[in-house]
Amino acid sequence: MISVDEAKKIILASVEPVDTEQIPLAESHYRVVAEDVASQDDIPPFDNSSMDGYALYAAEVQDAHSASPVTLKVLEEVQAGDVSQKTLEKGTAVHIMTGAPIPDGADAVIEQELTSSRNGTVGIASPVIKGKNIRRKGEDVRAGQVVVRKGTRLSASHMGALASVGRASVVVFRKPKVAFLTSGNELVRVDSALGPGKIRNSNAYSMLGLLEEAQCSPVELGMTPDNEEVLTRKVNEGIHNDALITSGGVSVGKYDLMLKAMENASVERKFWKVNIKPGGPFAFGVFKRNGKAVPVFALPGNPVSTMVTFLQFVLPGLQKLMGMIPSSRLHVKARLEHDITKKDSKRHFVRGIVRNEAGALVVTTTGSQSSGVLTSMTAANCFIVLPEERKDPKVGEEVEVELL
Ligand code: AMP
Ligand code: MG
Image (cartoon, rainbow, N blue to C red):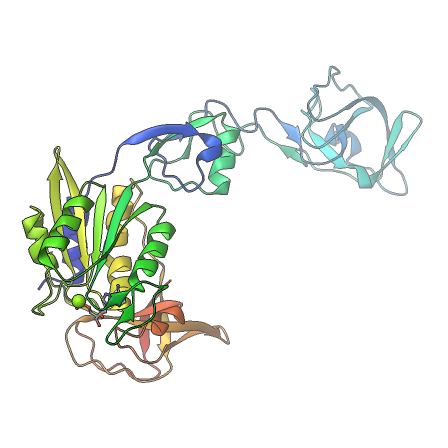
């Protein structure tokens, strides 16, 4: 049995990013960039006004007052998209709109609201400091500066940033095809009646959701009985994708045949059993195909174990596969609202609800922590992470919380 940290380390060391492709910027939402994207130009490309108002020379209005306004001659009007042809001289101003370039000779813009215009002149009723309401060339991005780093998952703001530097297309990592299969003689499909001894195949759907949240392309291989031959065939099929995830049949029962099927399909096992609760029987291996290692994650079938091992082990592996800069869920400290029983030396991921109470974080468990109780997961907004050495945490004690 290996530790949670070792398991993650082995997975990350075994997985390589998929290859890349060039796609239109418009299709890049949530894709992972495979290049550092730098700007060729300064952004903004010129000094411009952040207000509708008057561009002027600040020193000329330093004594302006509502009782004694300074009157300036308005040379012209400059709209966003145009460039002023005039240079300011003593006693003049240019009527300027937001986003228009600052005319030569001006060093500040006064807001329209603080002025009054009449017959080609403008009255300035208050002073303005030099540089006021001017957005400087390059204040957002300098020419040559990287605006989106390799390994970034593109959000809306990244797409905007890429557009602002003129990138109509972008090189991204291919969206990996991740096959998954569920196993167990007891499983029936979601739309089937429950016969004696049968349960509905919930993992097929939680895994589908997890894969979609991870932004992979799920390839469902279906539901498999606990039969070595069928399992082997399905594993063989699955490893022709970028990764394979299986659920169930990985424990020590007589009909737990997943490890045997992996072996039959020439999947090299890297480890089996992790010092974690829930999810202890988790296994991981790789299949070598054309010099590439296809990761194979074998998850225990208990619905909560499936989700916990996915989030702790599969997701970091998939992120590496997708070329992402490693990211982890946010960890915070919170006070326990009641005792938790923990006698063993495993790392526990207890489903919890964390909330803010008068400025301090407090956390409670979601009730039964049996690994079959999926509602303990649906109610949770965090895991209470209890380290290996921690025993019986008590009410009021501080615990580490991993936000979901
Ligand atoms: P196993 O990992 O195959 O030993 O299964 C452990 C427990 O999880 C058993 O009670 C199974 O019935 C249940 N289980 C296994 N696979 C699924 C699934 N796909 N959906 C819901 N429950 C499952
Ligand atoms: Mg089973």
